[in-house]
Image (cartoon, rainbow, N blue to C red; front, side, top):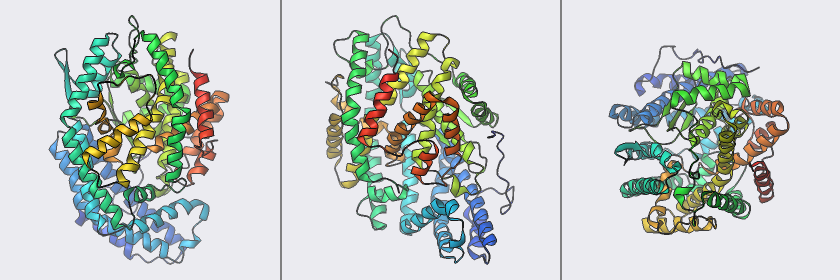
Length: 570
């Protein structure tokens, strides 16, 4: 039914060999769309297709500039190419985009477009019209440049262990060492290296907060949080729902984390559990090493995905054939991982920082789930139809983490390691919830209090950390490291308020996994059906298509946590 033999979208409106070099060459396409007469419904639908083709061209060009820059943050030409787009081209596009949006919604034939098909698309267009302010164009250009500085700063972070230099991601493998002294040494080196750039990141963040707040005020909002909720298209839940989520995590997740950490403490035989103990195994137990390098990780993931459903493996093979993966960690590469949809090409790009650890397998199957989503949504006729809510996007990735566990023999050749890997994954499913709640709650405070001092920022961060602390982990003497630990979360710098999505989606993913445990094929059918809808349905309707309820109330969270607890290896 679904095919990974994805084809680059054919151009009809724009010449096949056209590429973006400057605004002067691009502008005529926008002007043509704006000036075109539309007298029939068929002409309106063709106009929408032509506009979609132009959007796809622009989006993919911007994506490649960002991809190339994050793959090599030390290359000033790549950084300049990205900055040129966001300062010289994107600001010119925005007034035309607003004018085209108004041309569509004001056209008498707009009401004749099929309501079920176009409802969410037109709702998004209306939202964009309401948010657009000409005075925000230069601000948004400045923000786009500033946000990328986070990767530039953190991409240079290296530490030396036993005479060899490592990125912070690569150094993470030492936190799995059976030698507790080595773990502590490397943990402290990582934190000390982060401290070196604390002031630089605080200065950068001050600029981001100030400009984001001004952006919100310009658009008539009292704070950036309320502006951003609308910008993100959060039509189906409110800030109050987020607050409820925070409290539910305290009530129903922290007790489970106490159990997990107490079990780890007992297993390691230590008097106190410290942060550098979390990834460790008892002496005599070798750390999990599920792959050798990025190529090995990819091949094993393809094998895993193919056994789950052949179509999934074919998607990764197609990306590999197109050379649209950059998996290994190295100096000068931005931190983190992402799947970047490519609007024209169809097959997306996966970027990550693999260093040979179990967590890298989770990242790979996570981004692989996003990639499947990109493939499934690509056949939709309009670029705007493919702009799905981030919450369902994360259901795609997080569900794949859990469903793929059935085929993790691809990574592990003995039952003991396989069980350890599954336990690691399920512990992560539970222990990530407090961090999601912490990051989300922190952002509410940051943008409700935009003129705060750096000192107040640190104090508030420490206060929120304390609210979600379990009873077992001992952080004594590490306060100086903890005070700036928010700086390791790139979302705060690059995609503000994009984090609660992970919590909502994790609940959806657990629900998806419950389906999978009952009937594997039905669950994967529902998974594919929902993802193939792209953004053509509301968020609750997309959840429903996946066989899920869009509900993150305390009662729901408790039920899902109980399910995961019962699935944990004994």
